[in-house]
Length: 258
Length: 311
Image (cartoon, rainbow over all chains, first blue to last red; front, top):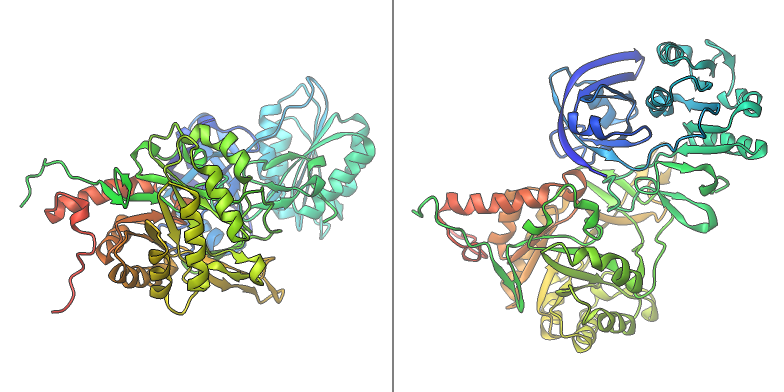
């Protein structure tokens, strides 16, 4: 599969909530090759500090030349990205890694996203399309981060439920509280979010005997399989490298108890 | 002044090993080359130094293994690699198609392991040279790194030389008091070339959690942050030994590479820059050619060690 080092041009930066942004980038090579669940390595600054690119799931692909990233400001790299302006250039490498694998034809699926982990699920929901029944469960700290994203999933024909820590939108509590009720009708679940959330999703799916794929996150230097830095504990005592074995893996491949 | 269209000769020799140009990749930053095939014209490179190989596969360290630091990064990968047999069976077929020199970085826990490994790799089609990583702990000598004691470094060098007819490059650790003593020891022991520097041992702490960032607590510092240290050591070593020196340490641009050549390096390796700019190596080959043209030079070997000192 092709991989490109491409200078993208920023089209728009939208602030969805506090410290929560959506970047639209013109990157025709990467956008036309990208599949849901894959990621890009983004250069946050044209200088040497911060040194390393940051990995981001591809949030959406509009047509064949624009892709979107969902960014939460958590440190210096993401802060620099949030301060970018339309017209600026950002170097990307991608599309990288293994994406989501399709569910059985015409089956019902459940997507579970927590916080910034919602990012790759919108791209996947677009490609899954109806008439399939697609239930989307979104969780976050507060409702403001979810309002627009929830509306976009709804527009795609998905049934959306939300959970927030502060109870400002939907269920007050964990998004995983909502999952069990939907599993009897789901053939497959796809999850992306914090490790404890994905561990709970994996356990719930295992109990219900429903297939589950998760999108992992780790610090990585290259995204190409060279630095071997993005390690996660896998089944049977082996190590998984998020960039090459994932980011999307079968939930059974991860050692959740570690 | 040289005519603008005169061909520039980029070829260099590392003892018995001839290279089409002086730009190599540093071990551990370029995988087994296939990882970069879409992003770098591999045939344009002088050569690739592959991820360090041990006799048996190694799983590496638990996570977290890397952390970013100012203008650099720390890593404690723990020498994860597929082992010699899988390397030969699974990685060499692609490497043979790269059309550039293939240098295999080797590592071991004992003198014997280095020797057996060197023997195993000798005669494998497509392997052009060995680079000996002596920054590993000697398990039989209480874990003291081979690369910190001149006598031990010399013994490893002799053992590898005796086990192979391939050119042998010894990669020096900067974590020593006297780098020149290390270089002289491996030169006397028969090394065909010396590469330096490996990573500087460092540490990073998360003040919020009061924990080290790396599961291994300490790790190797690399990237532009270490370039001045590397440049100084390359200059000192190149001034003291007769065998060719390969400069490594924070090289990310043409200017960086040229500085190492001026300091006395016959070739250079690009390391951490491969992570943040996978195209770096190809750009540096082109850049050195342009630099030589601009300087009115016709051969890269003419600028090696041409640092101007004094008034």
